[in-house]
Image (tube, rainbow, N blue to C red; front, side):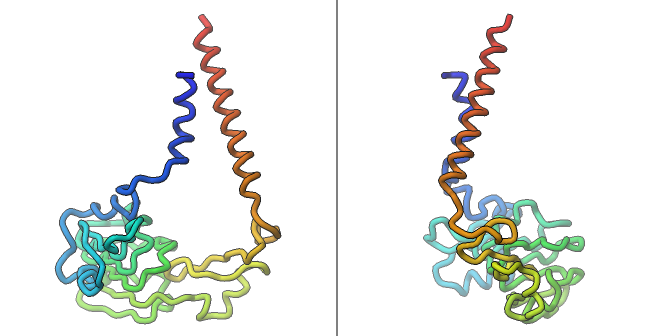
Length: 227
């Protein structure tokens, strides 16, 4: 049994809920040292909203569980590209990337940032998704401000053909959309109808995992007994 436990440990870790400190963008909040910069759009937003508090370079919703990250200030952080942990801030409403030597950002860099309403980038960069993805684009000094993310599903009927028959268009970030299956359809191109067999799927996955664990355990036992 002692040799079998290490094989089950990865499975148990997957089933355990994340620790409170690991949620809400804890890593990305410490990407740059110090608190929110005075005068940044994130600091102004955090000061104007009741029920918020700052933590490192982040503005959070006070008392929320899990803690919701509302703003992220990564200005003047010597960034040449977006940090790998930026996806932790996908719920952010305000994001500041000014005063960084950023290179042009790949398409889809802000995939999933559907709540983002105010984004500040260096003047050398365009707003993600282009100006058509925002209600207003302005410049001031060495910064470009992208304000009011547009829902492209509502702004153009030309996007309707992108989704299959049983799906609907939904925003997925600045200039990005996704197709979500209408209930009760699911699967490839939303062609399958009915409730997704969650119990059957979990049962098959559990059986396969247990079988592989037993196989690996038996193999290790056999090797240990072999002189």
